[in-house]
Length: 207
Image (cartoon, rainbow, N blue to C red; front, top):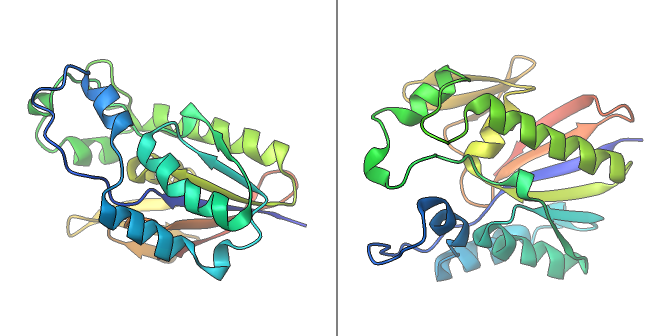
């Protein structure tokens, strides 16, 4: 027997103007909600037979992931379990103007690179992996869906996959097989199969 985890990126968020918003950047990011288009994308892409018979559903504590996960919850008649450890990488800045040039590239190439009070690649991967192991231990031989974030998912996947920058695009490979070249689109993600001892058996990319 094996345990299946669907690791899914949230749908498309709404663009807003936060110039008059007194919340710090982290809170603004956590409160970001789905656009009308994002709701439509989630409803269409998650209404897929691949996501039928999900036994357990998890989401980060961000509004956009919960709003995405609700379609899986409705389709499978299950509740959403909220885990803050599934959240997006924290930038550690007060405004986007403080983000250094080539920040994303530097974080991919150097797992210890971060700014201010933010998180580096390794810190994100460690907390995401801790969450995955907890979920696996509580749901042996079940089908699990997790709604999280593109960067957090990428950093976690690097635990099992090789990730290279090729022509300014990320290439994900598992056991020398290319899974994806480019970015994880809205409501796309990875299907992971784990053995009883939580060893990863296989991984594939789902558009």
